[in-house]
Length: 216
Ligand SMILES: Nc1ncnc2c1ncn2[C@@H]1O[C@H](COP(=O)(O)OP(=O)(O)OP(=O)(O)O)[C@@H](O)[C@H]1O
Ligand SMILES: O=P(O)(O)OC[C@H]1O[C@H](OP(=O)(O)OP(=O)(O)O)[C@H](O)[C@@H]1O
Image 1 (cartoon, rainbow, N blue to C red):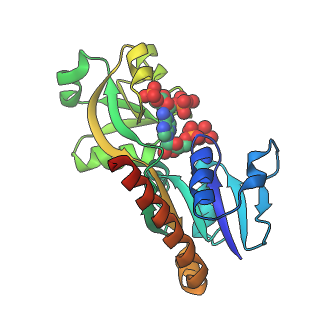
Image 2 (image 1 turned 135 degrees about the vertical axis):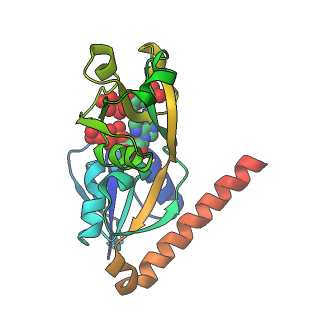
Image 3 (image 1 turned 90 degrees about the vertical axis):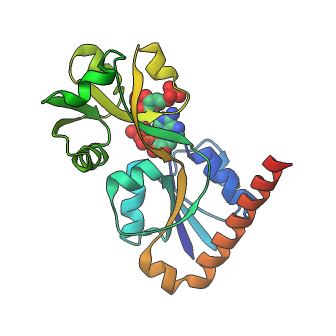
């Protein structure tokens, strides 16, 4: 049996769509429920529903053989696992954002406060740039930090850009593009190679079909 850890929340619906298209019967997950563990009718696959930031942990420890989670979470958690597929959904960008008037001045400030849900990504990014910053970890509504004076800038996800715009903030720098990824436990890839490879091949076929659909 292969266990798949699915990130609850924003990514879940599209993750289920991909799995179903790849032949994994996720029918039970579509019913309203508070259950966290599901089995496909053939008992070949177990699906566990995990908070997004915990998916890499479940996969690294081998509780889950496979995980579906955002690249932002993978970068932040820095767990030891194999990233096998870019699933192409959940697309957004990780950026540094702040007030438009900070566009030129913030980078030369000697003391910059950065509020973010992603302290590790932010720390790595600014240290690569050789800029000393103070990181303030928040758990949500990160755009509030510059508005209230808690920070000078933020490191956060931008999808449509609406949240930034409605709060008078702009993108100052782009860090990287983000999308959902399929990750695999390092031991599982060897021990359950046949099952995991079959799953990955099926998902890859779904992704190819979707790509062809976009072109035509
Ligand atoms: N507009 C968006 N905002 C945030 N994440 C997005 C967006 N679009 C796509 N994503 C992706 O969806 C993933 C899950 O986001 P979601 O909002 O469900 O959880 P979370 O913010 O990590 O966790 P929680 O809400 O439990 O604190 C993110 O890690 C990111 O990869
Ligand atoms: O560019 P947009 O389309 O506006 O999307 C970006 C917003 O979505 C996310 O927040 P989320 O909705 O997850 O809420 P949170 O602030 O509680 O993390 C992210 O942190 C931004 O605030």
